Length: 166
Image 1: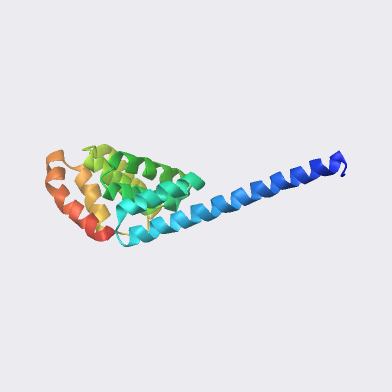
Image 2: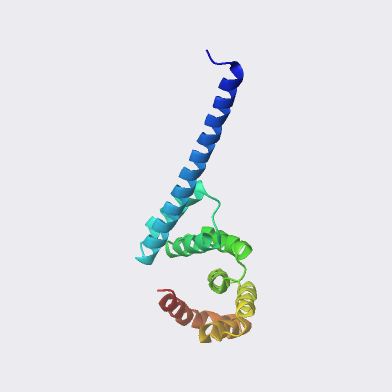
């Protein structure tokens, strides 16, 4: 019969191995579902992408790219409130993501809040100060003018962004 200290050591090693195995499975699952979500988004199957991103977040904390793509998929499936939460998380994790600020601004326009939208569009402009985008300049001009002009032109702007995002 083995002494008790050998059993204790063996038991501790088994717990450590089990913890490592769990971590490996979690990492694999996170990366698998994350990639599946990106692939589904690439073929514009946004509802499957949303489900994959949810599963990925069950296995890991997520990163800026995951939350941004999750937000885009939520926006495409008309879950604007949750999409905004994802874009907010992206702005914390990756404040240099130019498109994230634009998406936040567009969501604020949708909520008829041009002042906050302008803030987000100007943040996007700060991130890429040397980059000139006619659509961003149009959005900034629109949000600084009267609301009536903004909402008349909003349909044109939405079509422009939809074409850009595809």
